[in-house]
Image (cartoon, rainbow, N blue to C red; front, side, top):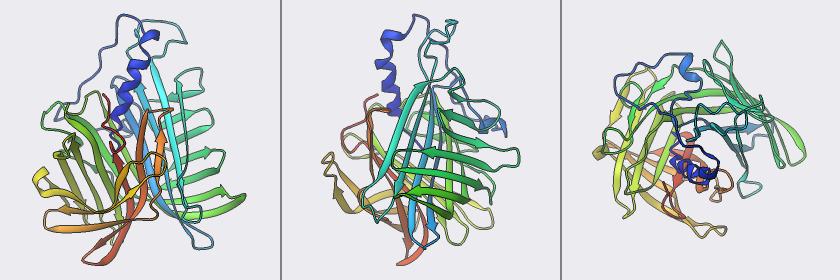
Length: 357
């Protein structure tokens, strides 16, 4: 799940460019039936959406790596009747990151540009998102292809589905707060098999691995007292898939929470806010921002506790030049009853300062 609602603050920066009649955006309502492949594609009538891929890789030498690739589409408040090709109706934003314990810190890059001129877009009908030479696409047979080239690394992957889509919340209607309007449409695609190459440390390295795709879109804001969120997902070794999140208030309390666990047979169990909790085990202070993150955490879902340990501590991503946010986004391992049970990713936001809406 990606709740980078802080992107809404870009609307403030864009005000000098905007005209008087903003577009009418579509609301998220319960009962909508998600349809595929259309819902893999863009939803330009909603304010914000993302295609968010995280995963673990193994190099040909057996070394572990983590990666994140995220594309965002953000609707501005520009007059939709403005015929100019330069009108900033939609923004395309992208983040990419590589976690390598041998480097010891997160390598990352970011881009932002208005959609247009076939240089940046998010197309409808199927996943097809592009920002200059960065792209993420879905073929008719369900395979994804993505290529990201940065100053420090290049990612070139094919992602192959192995399991059905996982609709979050109530058949894809996902609550994000105590008010019914605080919601998104949300589905995941766990246990994607990754193959491809990375170019890193002046070497072109074949890799394989497992990834998790989150797709979300909405036009709503979080609760006004929300400061940030903690989110985690795991591809478990037995074929199960776990997702859990909590939204934190500015006073540190839990505003909302949710989790879902799908077992190898496809049976899904959902957990209500009172059944989900995040408890820090160990914190790490960033030398870059001085933020303190709970990088080792215990998550409770019902009667089960999951212990989360980071691949490395320094996985903080400073995206203030694109989304105006700083967040911790890292590869983590999952343990249950003291035994290793899987790998995944965790995201921690609102620790530098509360998110500004």
